[in-house]
Amino acid sequence: MAPGADEYPEHDHSEDGIGGQMFAKRPQQLGQEEVYVALRGSGTLEADGERYPLDQDHIVRVGPAVKRKVTAGPDGLRLLALGATPGEAYDAGGTL
Image (cartoon, rainbow, N blue to C red; front, side, top):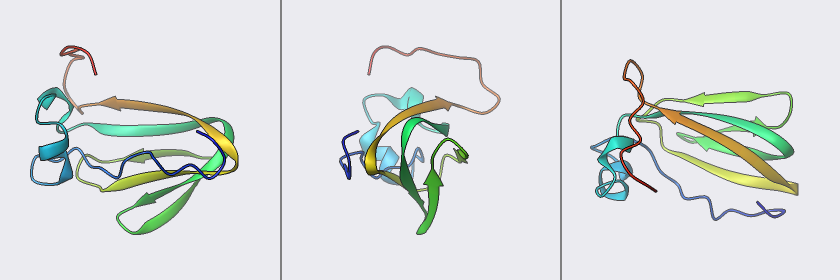
């Protein structure tokens, strides 16, 4: 993500929240939690109104129902986002 970029969409993975509409064509993503790892640069995760740093010193886990948005810091952000449904086996479910 470029410095200050904020195009990462605000979303959750809840059927009753934003995710219900966002992932209507990819229902395998409903119920997923995500783990964010900053590989380079820094940024901020806003999760349910609270702000958390994303940098080399922090790894962040976000539950399925939590509304989240990532914004890159002044040096940009290379972000690894890992998503999976707790307790479920991996299901590729097609392409993104």
